[in-house]
Every structure is written in C-alpha cells, then in structure tokens.
Image (tube, rainbow, N blue to C red; front, side, top):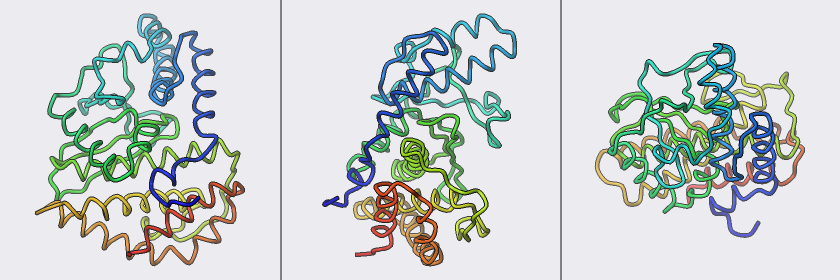
Length: 296
C-alpha cells in the first residue's frame, strides 16, 4: 500500500462483494428486486427489520410495503447518493436489536427539511475534499439526523450492526462537525463489514483498557475505537487548515483530546491487532492509527 490516503486506507477487497451478497440474500427473503449499490445494502436492512416489525404487529399493509419497496421508492428522501432522514423523537424505536434508539425508513417517512439536506451536502463536500467521500458513500448512504445542538453541547452519534450503512447523529449548524461525526460512524460500519468479509472472529473474553470509555473493553470495542477515532483525527487535521472561528477551536479541542487518548491506547494496539487474522485488515487499522498519531 504505497500512498497512505484515507481513500487508500478504506479500499479493502472483499467488502463490496460481501455487501452485494448480503443484499441479494435479503432480497430473496423479502421477495423484492433490490439492486447492488451500497445504498441498496443499507436500505435492505431497513426493509428486513421493518418487515419483521410489521409481521409481529400483524400489519399486513405495512408488511407488504416492506416486502416490495426498493431504493426507487425512496428518491424523495435523497440528497445525491445518500438518503437523509430527520425523524421526530417520538418516531424513534427501541427493541432487542439495539440498546439505543433507532429509526427505520417506512411508507410514511417524510423528507428531511431543505436546510437539513443542504447541511448534509455541505458536510459530504467537506469530507470528500479531504479524502473521505468513498467511505461515506459506501458506509453511510443513509444519514439520520437526530437533535440539533450547539457547539458547546454534547453530541451523540452511533451506528448499529443490524443496520449497516446507516449513521445516527446529532448535529450543529457547522458542516465540518457533521462530517467528523459521519466519518466516525461510517468507520464503525466499515470495520464491521471488513471483519465479516474477511472472516475475522475476535475473542469476547480478551480485554484492553479503552481511554475513550475509561474502562476495559473487549478486543472488538477497543479496535473499533482506535479505528474510528483515527479517521476523525485525519479528517479534523485537514479540515482545521481552512476552518475559522468557533469551528477551528472545536477541531483543535478534538485533536488535543485524541492526542491524549491515543497516547494511552498505543501500548495495547499491537496486542489487540494480533487477534485480527486477516493481514490486509490488520495493516489498514495499524496504518490508520499510525497516521493519526503522527502529527507531522
């Protein structure tokens, strides 16, 4: 791997094939005609979960929609190659698939506001400018905006293994902040797909101290944190060069904080990576973290 750019880091063979195969299997279960894009992959999981919810609720009309819908039925929600969702708090779901709230696209999903879609477009443009366009296209094709916050408020974001390709995130009025958080969550989605497509099984009983959580974490959680935060550092370092005012201060604070976190995590990284059986994947994570801690 010669050039160490974000695009190169995430260009890992096997992931696209895994996404296509998984989408095809879901389409077979539902009996519909999904395509083979990353957006189809993300939407397929929404349709599968939605169909299960509808079946349990004995809602025949809703089940029929989930079994027949395709990406073409969701064009009113799109912003380029992405779908942008902005559900009301009361529309969020909680169930056994997630400890945190989530949202499923459905027949009654309304488009996000023009302002929200413009913010997402600006965030995507910033991410793309700094080398993260492919990551977001392939691993965050569905973007779910949650709560609007100020820069000085805590921002929450997450991704779910049962909804790959979807990111859930609070947001501010600043595209660079949204780009940072979308990159973080899409990094989690990427690593999940990479582990699955390369047949990597991590032990649940081996733990390492995670400075991001302040506690012992299984190998899986520790490596996820190292990878996702390394990509936010690579993005923030580039975005900071043209940022001004409050956003510049925000990115500076993020970089300072991550410098301290990585300083505490680095001693455990090699040991944690020894459990990753796929050489190419182990190399990507190692190089990504190495680049992040290199302040040059």
